[in-house]
Structure formats: structure tokens, C-alpha cells
Image 1: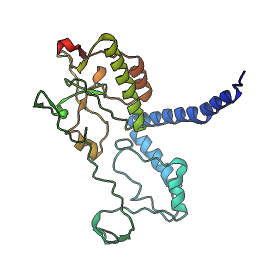
Image 2: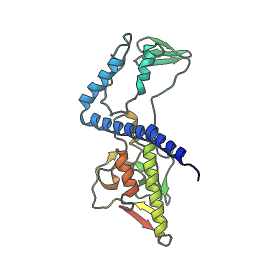
Image 3: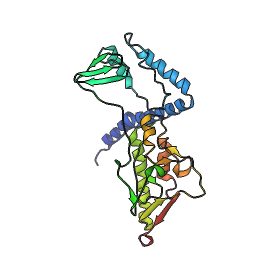
Length: 269
């Protein structure tokens, strides 16, 4: 009989070197998110203290590392193993804080008059989010304003038949949100296939009052701007936004797949 020793060794190696560290990182990120949200002043103090300890003597803490917002009001930038600070200590990287006055053929001029020479400028501001690439949606010829719709489990849109979309998390890897949506939509399609349904329409019950919330719980300017054209989420039931991957994944795999959804067969249409 063929030996399975190699297979067992490979499985054990995957679990110990990939699965366990990944789960640990995910839990740690989730706990950090809730800690920052619950105790923003303590979290800010702790994070800034860690930054100050990593800075080389020639790099000033202020004003480069004093954000005006609280942790997780905007997405923080993680630097694994402090490699960013190591680059500064070696003189391979630096940081400059200021307002850009103009861009020249060989760099940037700041409002302070300082000139920064650059071979390449990578813009990292001015992001504009849109769902579906600004496609104009309509139902039976009537235009649909996505900003007026609630998102069902952050996957389907209120009163729009058979339309699914994918968004990720702001407090975890973006693709984890895509995974949760994939599980839920696949379960929904299998449910429809078993029952002979061809149409699924999420509908908000008339007697259910929900408070509108942003899909992403961020105070970042780009998130607020996007809220003008993006669907909303609610504060209860399947209309509630997502923020906990482990809970959301369990609900996607085992939760009620038909709550607040109207199903139709071909003969009903």
C-alpha cells in the first residue's frame, strides 16, 4: 500500500506554519480594532509610544507621526517587524510632512518652500469609491439610486432582484469579506435551485425600523464622500453591517438564508 506519511507531514506543516499563524493574526487584528474603538485614548497613547521607540534619533516624532484622527477612524498602516523604521534607521527612507504647493518636472515644492526631488511620484490621495464602476442601474426602465437602498447582509440590495455585490472589511483583509459573501451567495443559489426559485429580492419589512449606517465604519474623507452614492446598512437583522469575520462567516455558512428575502419562481414573474 502507498505510504501516507508524506501527506501527514505536509498537512501538519501547513497547519503549524500557515493556518495557526494566520488565525492568530486575524484574532489579534480583530481584538486591536475593538480595543481602539472602545478605548481610543489609551490605544492612541500606546500606538504612538511604540512609534516613538522605533524612530531613529535624526527623525522627529512631531509633526510626522501625530495624526489628528483616532485609531481606526481611518485605516492604520501596519509595518510588519518594523521594517519601515528599520529603513529609516539605515538611511534608506525618510519622511516629510507638509502641504504640496506644486509639482515640477523633477519633484515637489511644498508650501514651506522646501523642494523634494523625485524620480517617481505615487499619488495616494483623492480616492473615489463607486459600486459597479458608476454603472447606471435601472429596473423596468426606472433609474435606481443605490444610495437609497439598504444592503442585505452586505451582499444583496434592497428591492433589486438577483443582484449581488462584493465588498471587504476595513478592519481586516479585504478578501475575507469577499469570502463571506461568496459563502452566502452560494448558499442562496443552492437554496433557490432546490426550491425551484429563479428570483430573490431582499425586502425591508414595513414594520422594521432600522437606523441608516455607512457600509464602512470609517471617518475617512473618501468613505464619507462615497456614502453619497453607496448603499447603506442598518443596525439590526440581516441589514446590519459586517465587522467580525468569524461571526459573519458562521452566519454565512449556517445562518438564515431567507430572512427578509422574497423568492419568486419563473411563473410568478
